[in-house]
Length: 75
Image (cartoon, rainbow, N blue to C red; front, side, top):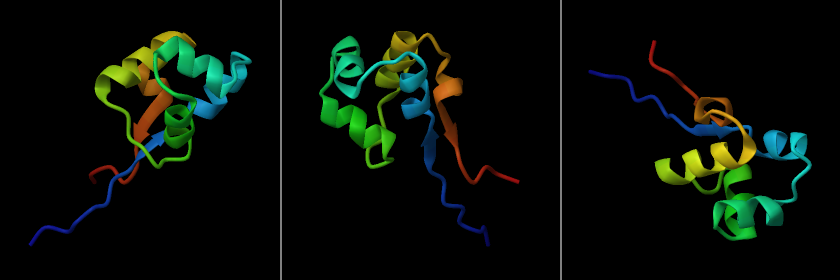
């Protein structure tokens, strides 16, 4: 029987945005989404699509794996 491992997407979006001195509104404009979407991603309430993750990484000058990681990895 396999143990269930709950995995969550963790993000450093707020930190990366602060490093670039961007508001949620400014990042949202760069990414083509709403400020509410940025807020929801930062608080972990919304998981972005792969495309949006790449767009956000590009807007922040980061790699996707610098912004997003999985918790509870397999052992």
